[in-house]
Length: 381
Image (cartoon, rainbow, N blue to C red):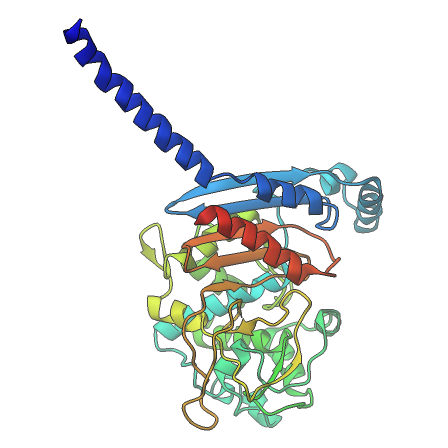
């Protein structure tokens, strides 16, 4: 009896230990409140959504949500008729490989692409745009700095996305799109006037074409999309790309991009961007002396770095007059889009996530984003 007891006791003890750790692990990964939040907000999110979360080298959460209302289905049918598409295709359920336009979430792509050329010393953040684009100098804007284009502080008077798209309809080259921008009036002092728009990142696209001697789409494919295995991501592959809002992507592809940034510029052992420049991208550049002319509903009171919002907005300070403001690296960063998609990285909790949706209803988005991130943060502790 005693021998049997000795043999059994360790087995029972090991089982209890396993169950204890299993229960603790399950409790730490309880996403029920996240599921409830998405389901409760699904109509406002457009009736379809994909949410993916990555931490510690693996996906800890992937969920598709699909429940279009009758009204949303009817709008989809009208959209299909107008665009000459199949109704079933337009109304199909969202998955991790569904491809949609991600609007301003594109800005992050373009900023990251430029960083690859800065790493090669082909561009500097403090360079003047006139160095690469003489047409900007021709119209008195050559002194605007590269970092100001990445930060929406060019001071150029810019219209909204619709204005930009209308202006791009008859543009046949990147040069023509830059010339259009160069001819716009100024509305503020470069570096001291923040107006969130598409203008600065389009200038960046022009610089990328100049230094790479390739078209923007090709440069993006070779340096970002291909090495990050983003097989369904591009900027439309026709016409002049809208670098600040024209990308199409999937939840799966966009997560690869976020994973690279979470890993300080590396993806599957490949260096895409230097760690130092990933850091620079994620610093708030909006000092107290910057006039905030316009921010979208999604952003609220966030700060802004290079192609991305700094959600905790650490204080930015210029060491001398007209110098590029600096701050500590943001704890959490994001680049939400007009159509509702919300990618984010939390450098403190070391995870990244992407809410992939397509819906123009933006009322209350900032608070909704905060709610969702808060719920995910609680699970990631």
